Amino acid sequence: MSRVTILGAGSWGTALSSILQHRHAVTLWSRDADLARAIVAQRQNAHYLPGIDLGPSVAVQADLAAALAGAEAVVLAIPSAGMEDASRLAAPLIPRTALLVSASKGLTEEGGLRMSQVIGRALDDAWGIEGAARRVAVISGPNLAMEVAMGHPSATVAACGETDLAERSRALFMGPAFRVYSSDDVVGVELAGAMKNVIAIGCGVCEGRGYGDNTRAALMTRGLAEITRLGLALGAKQSTFLGLAGVGDLIATGGSKLSRNYRVGVGLGKGQALAEVLADIGQVAEGVPTTRAMWRLAGSMGAEMPITRSMYGLLFEGMAVDRAVEELMLRPPRAEG
Image 1 (spheres, rainbow, N blue to C red):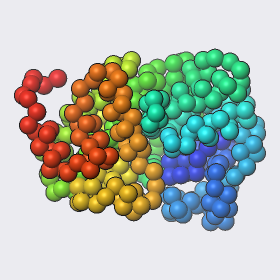
Image 2: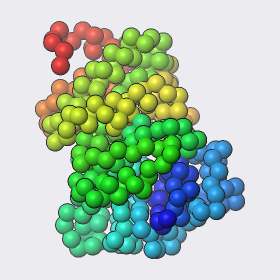
Image 3: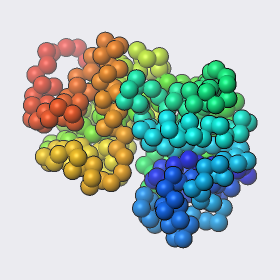
């Protein structure tokens, strides 16, 4: 049994607490003291993951120093928009021997940084060393939080450039209902987990607009080709996008009402404004800021990203759904690839 600290008491951080609690002593940290008190009182996170009980092996803290004291593994499940601030607060307090795992699927809007890079920069500054990012493992796959917490058989990928840390991360999360594969392709696993959310929004738009399975299948397939193209340009391996972190996660989030990104798309497809949709969901949908980051990365890398361009138009430029579809369907013909 290890002492595991999970930073971030949203749905995913809570789900990870629920599956780790049977084999480890877990501390779940919430920036929101009121939420921490509510979880302690109810023994579940009724706001983000209702109905999932947290047993006595899960402690809940709003004090960051207390949460990290003595931690043997630290899992950062912070939304991408808050990762930089949280990492800089946490870095000086993280034991240097702790296993570090990023469980966040997103990119920074400015610069398109992956979360392991954000965490690594904070560690570099706090510890006075360079290259700490290579010590940060990442976990990503077709992992809808509620299904994982309910014990539905699921699988994921733990990646790190250092093989022993990838294997330690795999061992940390592996359980009877949560199978973990290891990888050395940190770039690919992180990019796949972040970028598929943009395509998942598009799949939701198809649903909201009343289109059928043909449309969604075409969008998912061409979307996968698109994010793979950008991933390869950024140094990822093609095989990663054909595995759990890529096509697996896209299948899960591109058609599930449990997916916040899919639900964003459904609302847009029905004609709702983005602000209204996000207010209704009440949680972070990582695909929204990731769309902006992806479009900027595509420009800097010279990558052809027509679906990303259409999603950017829908989300940030007021483009009508019919116009976006027309632009995609009337592009010049080409060979598949």
